[in-house]
Length: 94
Image (cartoon, rainbow, N blue to C red; front, side):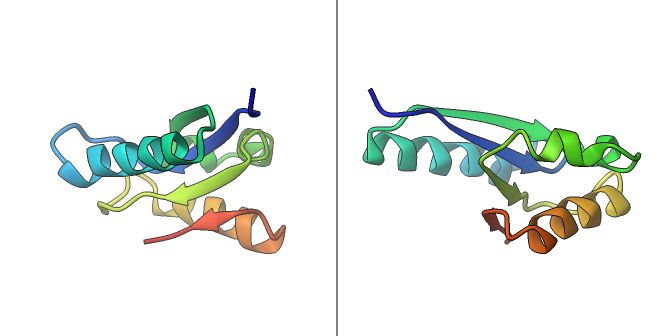
């Protein structure tokens, strides 16, 4: 069996945003096409503000910056992006 892919989505999930459902659907579709199991988790931007957020972000194989600003914490979003870029972590931004 193929190994699990763990993707953290940096953003504040909002059920009213079609783009948030589409993000989930696109990632699940890609995993199905690759025949790989996937775990997705939305990482709320306020949780990425405090020191130690690197521990949360490093748990994921890759990170996605969600569409649909404004974010609850613009600082948290920037810290997530900075984490990925300064560590050459797999990252997709929209």
